[in-house]
Length: 185
Image (cartoon, rainbow, N blue to C red; front, side):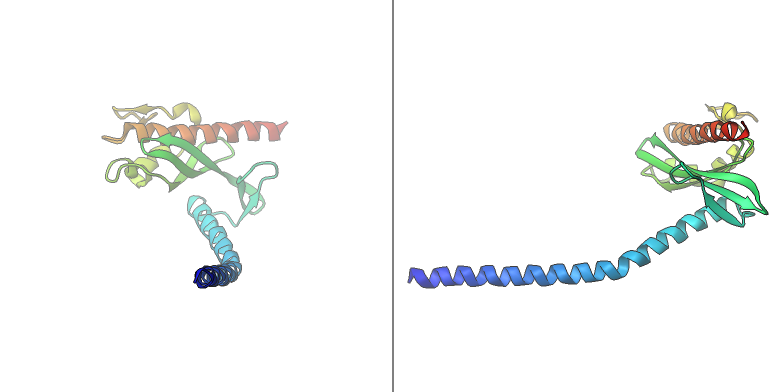
């Protein structure tokens, strides 16, 4: 009688092993087919985001020695540098991509990932807030509650988000300024 019980446990173990092997094989097969498609789609999304930021660019050339940095080029001239930016907002990390001119002035930015409060912090991606950055240099990126020409007016109810986005963009602009200063030498 004990012999039958051991055979049942052994049979169940064999069946589970076969099921796991088959499942693993199917998952590996699906992954090998979909991984290249997903990688191409990520590249397409990145290119579309860069094209939105610098619409006049003909190509985006990776910058050697800089991770995720691209030069937006038209007719051999660098129109902007497209660089990643990140800062900690109210809901966690805010990941962005920024377009900064060779003169260090901000052209535009796009928020890629955030966990900010819907209806408050998520307004940092809207044109009313984003348009304040255009044409400003790092020195002009100070968040204030009362609007001025020079600074960035905080989003109502989302000052932490406003400061985080501004900080990330300022740091990216400062990095580009250091990079372009090094190129001129």
